[in-house]
Image (cartoon, rainbow, N blue to C red; front, side, top):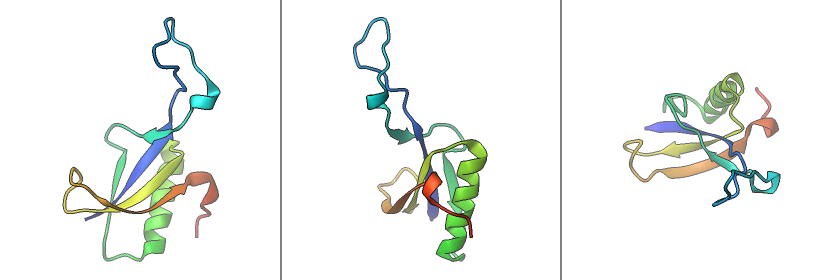
Length: 92
C-alpha cells in the first residue's frame, strides 16, 4: 500500500513551563492527527500523480508538508520514500 502522511507546525511550547510559554524557535513539523492525516494512494498511478494529489490535499487542508510511504499496513514500519514541504512543490 502507498500513502502520504501529512505534517503541521507545532505550537512551539516550552516543555515544563507553567504558565505555558511558547518560543518561535521551538516550532517544528509534527505529524498531523485525525482522519485527514493519511491519504491512500493508488499504486498503479505514476509518482507525479501521487505528488499532485498529495499537494492538493495538503493545500486544501492547510498542512505544511507531507511524506510518501510504502507499507503492508499503515501501523507497520513504513519505508519512507521522500518528504516534501508544500510551499516548495509546484502542481503539474
